[in-house]
Length: 385
Ligand SMILES: Cc1cc2nc3c(=O)[nH]c(=O)nc-3n(C[C@H](O)[C@H](O)[C@H](O)COP(=O)(O)OP(=O)(O)OC[C@H]3O[C@@H](n4cnc5c(N)ncnc54)[C@H](O)[C@@H]3O)c2cc1C
Image 1 (cartoon, rainbow, N blue to C red):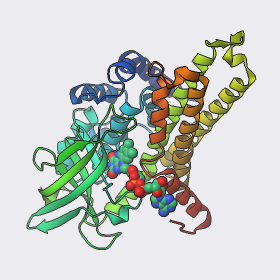
Image 2 (spheres, helix red, strand yellow):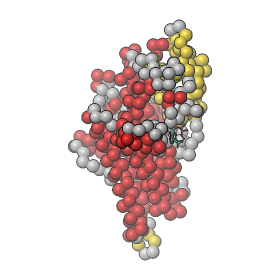
Image 3 (cartoon, rainbow, N blue to C red):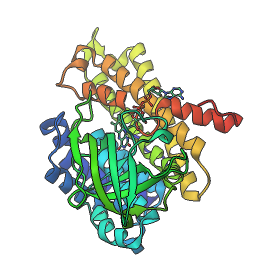
Image 4 (cartoon, rainbow, N blue to C red):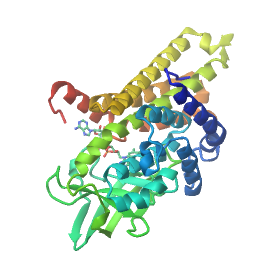
């Protein structure tokens, strides 16, 4: 299910990955670690295996040891991961964008030291922007980096940080100056050399991977661990969002697609009133609506990925994809539960988990409301934030 026109190479890559995910990955996330944290060694093994299929390694060009895939092919592969497990898609996404950031912005010594490990799946990174008082408005970041000779001293608290407890290093957005826009700077903190405290957060779903609070108390980081230029973190983060939002949109797409697949299976097996429930017109209509929502999500996601690949500005299209696909996931997962009747709210059936996971999707990487504001601003030129 879920095919659009693909090249032969893309189809082969998707098919190979799908076989691996079904055989090796599905049981881990649907049974053994259905709602509990996958230990780092096992998650690390999965990262190494997925990297061979072009995940994580795809965002990095061959000169830096990656596979240098195009953005549409990467999205197609990522959709398969998210369809198998939203949890697994999170470390894939964060490590992919950590690698992309290092390639694009980091000084050579940091690239040489951290990029190969990320690309091969040996290392985990976190990207720390959000804080307890700072979510949708990143201009308000409070975590401070104070210059002290050839070091910076960091103090503050980050929250909702994906990969937190797995992380070997953290790319942290800090305030180095008072100008809201030009006062933010990225630093790379090595967990062993510049220790930060990590505490996992328990959530409604997405608990098989780590989302954590990170505490920085007088952490001394060499000035050479700056990523990008001082004061350019906001500019660099915003340019990254265009790409990363398409991946978060693909998480919504994967969740919706999986809920649809589960609903189709159940509706063609479960019998009531003398026939399978798919033969009742109200269920048929629900399935048709779900499939249309999922396909519309896919078209928005793929279009944004193609625009990015073509080098065309895609802020509005990425926002549309993220907004629509993540909200569609919530609607489709809820309908999948409805089609399962009472079974849908038990742990015996996957749709219960999918519904909880879908509720999370419209929040990270800019909430639905933030995407709507971006779309409207692109249309009218008026800032309604
Ligand atoms: C599972 C998960 C993983 C995450 N991973 C990371 C990560 O790796 N790194 C990281 O830095 N952050 C991460 N985040 C944080 C995420 O980016 C924020 O949760 C998100 O940006 C929203 O911020 P907030 O939660 O503080 O909500 P708030 O910004 O407080 O928003 C609360 C509500 O107000 C609405 N709102 C806010 N401003 C406006 C406005 N101007 N107009 C209308 N409505 C508005 C929002 O849409 C929302 O409904 C993650 C979050 C989750 C849930």
